Image 1 (cartoon, rainbow, N blue to C red):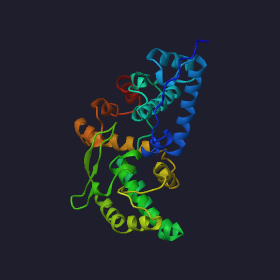
Image 2: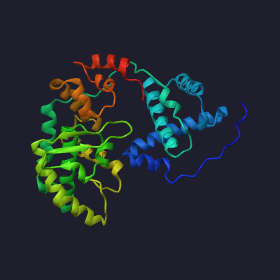
Image 3: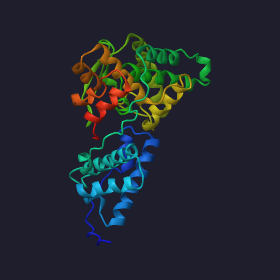
Image 4: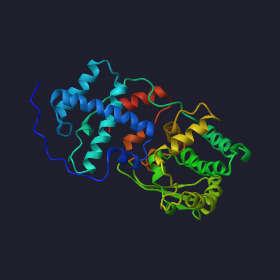
Length: 309
């Protein structure tokens, strides 16, 4: 066994890894999987006498080779590398390291299904309307009815604007402009900002939410927050809504399926540069992934254009 490198000074920082991910909207389930994968990586480093924070590109490749030798499939290795990349992004933000070596790693998909089943515009519309039209008596307590009204607004942002969970939990009240019928979605490390038009069916629920529901929720929880959807556990918010929608439409898999479907449908009526803007993609190659008529074409494009980021 090679000799361990000398320990180095690790600066203190206010936010731990879990808090870092919660701030970015990861669900508890996702964070649990990430933690397990990062811990497996750390154990491998300890076994070889490598300090994880000092790992080199060559050593990263050895780690991936070791996973393959264990019989781990490419798609699982991709998930592990993605989790470790998030951990290294956290280390950068905390001032512990200066570069994320895992961002240089590129692993191709195996050619199996990459995207979930695509939902048509009509299917998405029906999902939204069926969820909206649930009778008030079906919610039981008054609080459940209020939360359902909030969840209806969030579902609308998923099925009409194709927003992801991280974008939704970062929205602030000032980002909604009902007089213009538009919503501003701020950019992040991985996405560009954009302003999208709201559908007519979204306006009234949003108005009611801003004027009545949101103030009631803040008062009930004794909270003050600039966020549009204040919640103590924002990382679980979208997952719970999707689970509620699945009880009406079991064909739904997750919020990613909704976003992929929205982008695919946009490509049928808009040029690719418009869709790049609407989806918040920083690179046109990210939008190219969605171009095509079926999953076979999509898989080929992913192999060409979609390395791990």
